[in-house]
Image (cartoon, rainbow, N blue to C red; front, side):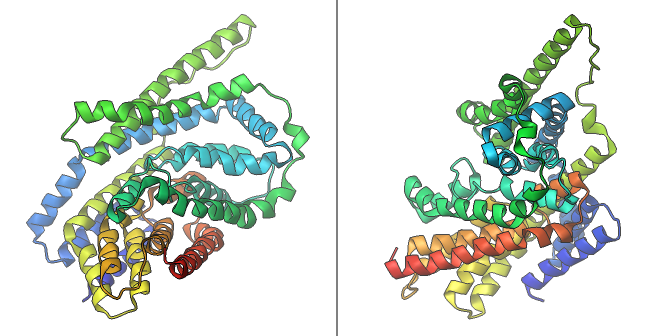
Length: 440
């Protein structure tokens, strides 16, 4: 049986298990084991791969990062903090303040390249949508889509770094070629997700009052994390020279979140002292208590399942086989360049996954004699379709955690983001055609 068929059958099986109320984390782990066995690996080797996946440093770092992200979400969504932050974004956005809240808050969080980063912005989108007649699926879609508008070109993302390296392209040229994707994604998000519901929003003057300093203090822990991504990487490369890039990146985020927890503790202490001076009582919240509630534990199990599945998928060697099968099938070269990254993105759920798995083959096809392909045209086609595969992937961490946070139905989240996905795919095709005609 073709490797592509094995992967897709296992995918469908995992989704069926999740549909019948089996924990998605457990379904993902089971799917990874089945892929290893179906690829011909002995039971002993499969169990060894499973053990290695559970012992991987990046798995435990991701879980630690997620626990602190949940705590940060608790801080941001406290009534006083969330109200101030929402009021500030609406003031700063003027007459477009509600749209600015819904789109800008997850977009700002998206500047931080961290797994499951949608957990940061989900509470903000929930608060920004108050007073609007919307569904959990719509809120999930708004959060998920706008969280990912930068990853086409933002140079802090590993997928972008891999793509720049494999295409051997100047970073500034890469960013210039890819930046229009962000404009298309923003326009699609506004037209298809946000604008249809703006009529339900309260008038902008209803959110005019507020304290800018209080809003900045609320978002300061997030800004601390962003700053850590600029300050800590050189230090960790010295302290952990043999660690993988993923471990180093997660360690940077973890250090930034630890500093963010310090900021949160100081801020909440000052708020309690200020309230005490006015004779008011403010309930003291135990740090990390939110992270161990059933809903949060469900998110942690799901993330563990994704990481274990991804590790077992790589060990099965089925993904390279699927890529070779697609090339050997004799389909047109442009179709192969779109489909290879799309399938890799759909299977791995991360940009670095589709870039690392498919771009070496894409670049090889581009360099072949009589291919008729040019670097810029190949890049926009391969990256655009790889990214859409990633956005539709049922194992994409951000999709899973935002769906879990809002208790949304996955099929309805897909339905909501489909027009946005098609818009970006259409732009990718048009840009490919135009750049090919220009010889770029």
